[in-house]
Image (cartoon, rainbow over all chains, first blue to last red; front, side):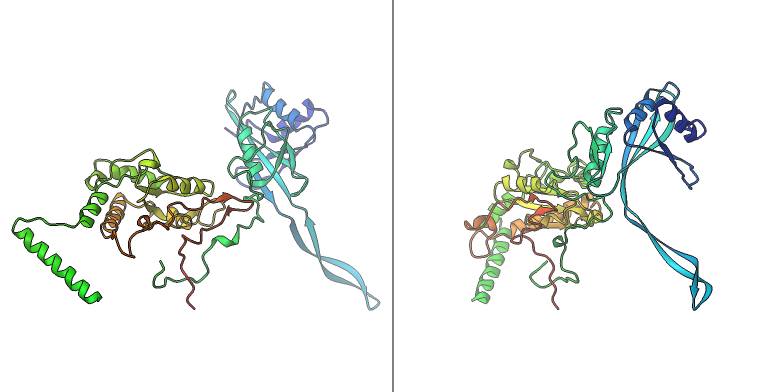
Length: 204
Length: 212
């Protein structure tokens, strides 16, 4: 499982050569592990995954894990120095600028090769947004082991996996409307005891 | 009136003690009936999480719950007297726990074993854990601990035995199963859009109250 055997740049080049039109982005990782992940575009994700599984050099035959990630709308505040004309004089004025990056959901796949004994290669599929567009293509047709884990990500994060053979909730009950692992999930409030409650005579 | 009753009960106790010194054994129907019940409490074969492992240990030779007549774990609620809620009750499991309790014949008892069963424990703020089984069924003995040791379960069981032997067969203070108009089945919660419906059974739950 060494990092040298799986070079993200090499995998990216191999995918792009094998799947015409596929756009692979490498997500930098500042941590000591230096484990890079590949962001695939939706149209070519299944073809790219199939290539990763079948390529005789990579042979990533085992999808060990599918995880969901929730990225909320991110608001970045920057202070920028701008030249402005103030009282007929040109001055440098500090201005605060806010940029809002819209939130999205992400499915993360960890791939290993049993045959070649190497890995992991990390794939990421990102949704357009956190609402109606929370859809990604399912990779279950490529790796059967992704079936239940994609159902879990659907259940807890609300990511819809297109072309999944059996997309139902797996942990929570079917009637539930929420996706409890989302960062903005709020648990029902009527379950708690009144705050500051103390034991009283006759009670518990 | 109460004073006179107490006085007569005391003299009956003294008379019994005196007679037993002379080799005459006396009892009351209530006493021997309760003695029989408390000495053969059959628990339900039912475990939910790690507490169940401690419960199993309690049944084995080292802690030996057979000493108290409770070694006969029945795999059917129809034959069980006691449900030991041993472990985390998830919201998905809660209706099944209530349903099993409803299927037990009266008189029936509940021991809530461990932090999870009594309050949700370390998972209390999670999205899928019930914050105590006493929200849906009446609990007789609560055991704190995570998990409680077998000795704690034995202690809880002895507490339950004491409770059974003190139950009166007649009078207003008689237990639920002797009141024809009191329920022996409780509302099974349903899966709602955001949580269980209802979130608590108000007739059963006796939460701490704000006094001021």
